[in-house]
Length: 59
Image (cartoon, rainbow, N blue to C red; front, side, top):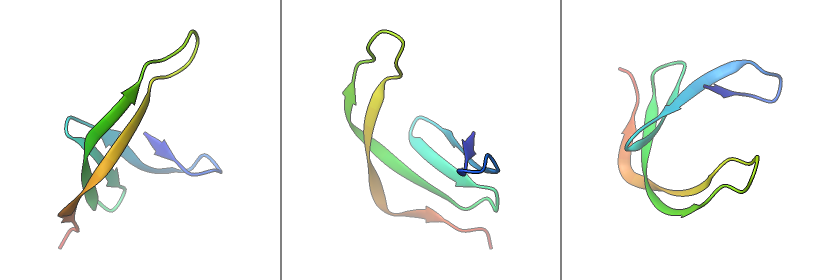
């Protein structure tokens, strides 16, 4: 789930492919271009590149 700074739910992340979807159902996808392994007690870091023209807006 994706939250804003106040904690309000604003969307979700899922994949593959990497996808972010807002609460209004608009979404964008990306391709993973790099990954850094997680250190002890940390999360894995990932770099994504957006896919041009791959944005969906509900109609």
